[in-house]
Structures are given as structure tokens and as C-alpha cells.
Image (cartoon, rainbow, N blue to C red):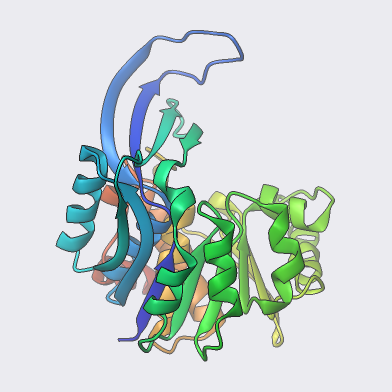
Length: 306
């Protein structure tokens, strides 16, 4: 199994559930509250590790209780946290999440130490062999640039979440760009309807026109569209009972990276990510919902690629 280096954020998710999401200025009575490990980078690292990849995680936490707990959880997963820095006096990242009765969510992220991820740590982490370098934009942009500028043979994957316009000037350094609908629209400078298969395929192809070698648009329950040199395909998602969609996109990205690192094609890795994301929404919480490789392979055996 290949090695994935994940460069990204570590957060603590503070999750409240309610019948519906509040409108601006409104207070809604909640049903339950829970605390989960999270952060787009850490979520993807856990997803990749459970999909059997060797994983090195580059990130930063504060020296508070949240940070110490998140570090230990990643270590317990078997993830190399050598390059997960602990900053004295900094607060660890926190995400405040509200989930409604249909599994939809609203999220506010307070980055804290994620803004302190050091480019030097990125460079050090890439001195050892790896097959895939996976990045999110929920950290210091200089750290992302360090990875993109590194002369390395690994496949460089950027999940453009949350969207940061500075990435636009560097898309020609990206091997695979992964976006959801809103992120793809931000890159393209125009909206499109993911319910329209033709429009979504065109959007994925247009993303390649901005520089990356391949592009993927994740479309939730619809699956994902992958565009690359050999064509453009829609990979449909299996039906799922939705409990909580938090972390489903991160699950896709982590499993996609793990499959690529094992030698899978873009299409095969996309299919694995789609199936894994569908499995994840049936369980509450981001990292608790990440499936293992056996579960993914079992579900894939019943799921056609398109």
C-alpha cells in the first residue's frame, strides 16, 4: 500500500442537532450535542488510513486539551504525526456545526493554530517517499504553496475547500483538483446545476482549462464527475440513509487518495471515494463515520462504476 501525505487542518467539531437550521438572527431549540474530532485535513487523513494507506499528517494544534486529544486520536489511528506541530499559547481549531433532521448542516470554523502550519514542516515531511500529496485550503496558504512548489514525483491533489481565490494562480501545479458545486463555481466564475449531468461534465472539463491535469466535482447523493485526458465520467453514488453529511466530502478525498496511492486509476479511485462517502453519511460525526477498506470494497462489489 502506498503512502499519502495529508497537509491540512485539525479541528474539534462541536455538533448540535436540531429539527431545522436557524435563519439569520433566530434561536432554534436543539435536540442533542456531541464533540467529535474533525478538521478537513485530519478527516481526510483518517479516511485514507482506514482505507489502508500509510499516512503522514502535516498540521498544527494549540497546546490546549482539544489539541492534545486530537493528536492522540490520530496517533491511535496509526497516522504519523511527526509533523503535527504543537504551538504554545495558541488555540486549536474549532468547528461549530448544526445538523438538521435531514442531515444537512451549517458550519462555522475558527482556524486557530491551523493558520500556523509551517511551510518548513511541509518540506521536511516530503523528504521521505510518498505516492500522493493531498492538500486542503483550511490552513496557512504558504504551507499549501510549499507543497505545490516542491519538486516531487508524487501526485499532487488539492481539495479546494474552503475556496481561497489565491489557489487560482497555482492550478497549473495541481495534478487533481477536487471541488464541490460551490467551489467549482467559484473557480469557474459561474454557477451550474449539478442536477444537469451535461452541465456538470462541462464544468469539470472547464476546470481542467484552468490548469489542473484532472478535475473532480463531487455532487453529494449524485456521486461525482471526473474529467481527465481519457474522457469525462459520472460515477453514480449508491443510495444511502442520511444521518449526517458532515465529513462526507473529506471521506471522498481521503479514500480517493488512498486508492490512488495503491495504484488505482482516476476512475477507480473516484468510484471508491463515492462509495465511501455514501457509507459515511449513515453515521453521525466526521471521523467516526469514516469506513474501513473492507467495508468500501464490499460496497463497491455491488456498485457499478457508472
